[in-house]
Image: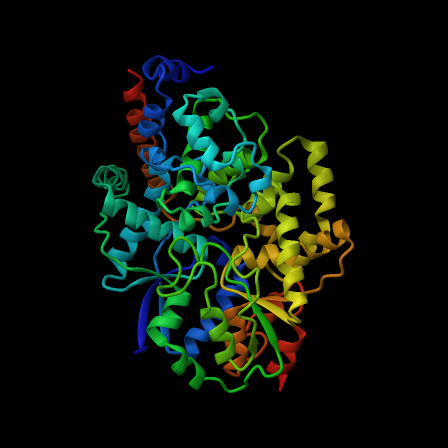
Length: 299
Length: 208
């Protein structure tokens, strides 16, 4: 039996052929190494993310999360819900808290949920994978698993918005959270705690609807990483990862920059440091190749 | 202008604040704003807002109903939550902005062609079809939202990006013919329909 079990909410972008499918592969690898069993919530649905607000009102949006929590409580009873996606985690946890504070909303959501034959107890803790790593497992246990320290790599820890606000990781500051830097150090690389863009917004979903405004912000995020001499950026958020990685060509065209900055998930860093292959670390999912990580994985 | 809009004007004559408190997500918090402006200074897209949040709050209290609801300001919200964590009064500003934008859209007062409003609806419809987002169709719907010619132009402009994503196996052409979804689609859609009915009824009640 695995040392730890969680009820897993993978989210839309993690699915096969979707934009953060590489994130899921590397998370599965690190869970194997840390003896964590992720039990997928059967038939989970989309959380509506933040951008769903225009189409869906409050109640329809929160009811989507109610269904996921209810399914988890029915099938994975007693297990904390864990999400790897910042938006999934935020929407689910926000719904759970809103239901606790607003009995009327809870009653209406339960009424809508009854249409599917489900019942919401709303007693399940909802965690981000970063909380599992930092709080449930801890740096010492993670450090003990490192077989190939990421020596010589300077990595800008880009936490982004929704992993950090409004909930964040307990005990961390909203303005300058340090857990990602500490994780980077634990893996043997050099972190940049003073990276001033670590909680800067990348535009989120507005990267689609307002590309110019968003890419201006993304440019700043990458530029600051170069200014600090970073070899790559690491992030816990699927939308941050995609936004900061995949528009670099377009930003170069607009601004005359020459960006070619790899943007990886913390989970890829961990998979490589734990001695796993480039494939298990999902480095084949990079649009901007993380060559230095590939080299370490090959060693 | 919609009947609902007309009903709301009658009901809340001279009291837009009361209307917002009753019908907008977390609207009961608007009166807690003390006009410090920290939210406006914290917004990553602050320079693009015609009216930053603290101004929107004062306009609500001043009864500037049309100016608020027809503004494209709220649609600039990236949901970064910076304003929420910095607000000294702990006003849930992000949620109120979402709520105002949604309410303006519901009443048919939101600015026509606002790109984030369009994307938000595309996202919602896309997600609801199968219970999970179909990323390929999401991208295509966005590119083609202003017609076929513009759609082809947008697709060509982003062709390299699409190729990069396919090569990395993070975009799949087969999603066009189905793709991921929940098993209980009909149950999920019934649930959302019920939730929408309950919410519509709650808002309509204030109009009578």
